[in-house]
Length: 268
Ligand SMILES: Nc1ncnc2c1ncn2[C@@H]1O[C@H](COP(=O)(O)OP(=O)(O)OP(=O)(O)O)[C@@H](O)[C@H]1O
Ligand SMILES: [Mg+2]
Image (tube, rainbow, N blue to C red; front, side, top):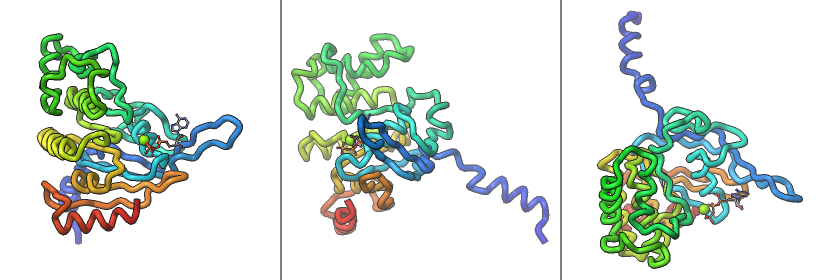
């Protein structure tokens, strides 16, 4: 016979009752866009995904399958037609702590009239830090992405890869708990890309940050992520969610890493 105190004890220790909400949850999310003189474009359909705090998740899928739309929905910049999106347990319509969510857009969206440093500062201006501290933080963020010496350059004076690193610094400078990155490394050469991977993972681990990033590169997804989500197009549905449990640092030359890359390439 079960004694009542056992039940109480079981309740206290039950992981489902103790668990904090996932950083991000998508429940049966569908999204359509209206079109002129045409039926609505059904972009995402029945997306279900749970992203625990501190996880790194990669989103892969063909061009146009809805990856950026998915990030916009998580960021509350667009709303689903069906289903619900929860950020730290609150629906995106009700969530208020958006300063805790960093977003690097697919296009870098730098302000052309501001220097690299002042573009990074932009992310801090809604806060209470005095100007001198904002500038110090911005400079540290630029150093972290390898742009020492370019803080006074304007966007038009930077290469595409340098601009994308300014955007990365801007998304990190606020020390977000959740970071959304849309193809953050696509403009970088392999060496710089590997450096940025290491930098991102170090920052992510030190703050237990939740990271969701979009990529077209299966290798990058496996090197960085705890879960790889593969979307299939029209409408975007989840084709596969692949957990990656291999120890870090992961190098594509390692047999297990290479095998996983080979398996997932077939699905993208
Ligand atoms: N605001 C919008 N209004 C109308 N249609 C849109 C809008 N945003 C995206 N779409 C359409 O939704 C589809 C998915 O777009 P999305 O940008 O999410 O794709 P993606 O997977 O990020 O592609 P890529 O890899 O090329 O960046 C596309 O067909 C696009 O034309
Ligand atoms: Mg996109």
